[in-house]
Image (cartoon, rainbow, N blue to C red; front, side, top):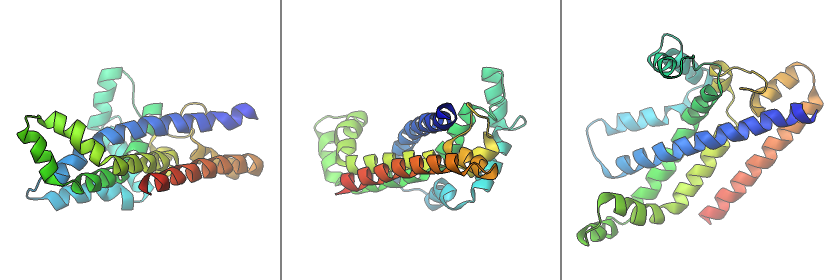
Amino acid sequence: MAIDFWSPVQLSLGIALVAALLVIVTGLFFGRMMAHKKFKGKSIVETFFLLPLVLPPTVVGFLLIVLFGRNGPGGQLFQWLFHQPIMFTWWAAVIASSVVAFPLMYQSAKAGFESIDGDIENAARVDGANEWHVFMRISIPLALRAIISGAILSFARALGEFGATLMFAGNIPGKTQTVSTAIYMAIDSGNMDLAWMWVGSVIIISFLMLIAVNRVRA
């Protein structure tokens, strides 16, 4: 029972952690870029970034299969690099979780960067700081609360991902079976005691994540 219970929990935490790290990096990059740049078609690009928030998980999963399946460009690149398909692997679960979590990190990072007084950053540039130093020593510290909130919410969202993960990564025990898919399978097989244990673990982790977000925003 202990092995059956802890395996999906540990797998979910590992996948959510790696996915959160990926979306923090990409969210900071695109959030910073979109906060300060104006260009034609910006609203279309932003809409594209936020689409995973409103698309059904099955649609996200379908698109990932098209892009990263054996005949998709991403799938062929992965197979060329690592000599194996990416679908139904641990990394497939990471990609699915990253896609659905990215909009939360992007929105938080963009809002944080938009709240910064541009005169402060310009003053640093006048004093000789390059763009990297401005970003790391001025922008990041001033937007830190928003960045931390986005990171926590992204982790929580990645932890709870179900539909896209099930379609793209499958439900392989010990390999791609996350807590969400394990709960589904436990209910389907009538193992309600195990399902309740997993449900309780997710509720506790999510509750702690939301408390952390509220503390950061306070």
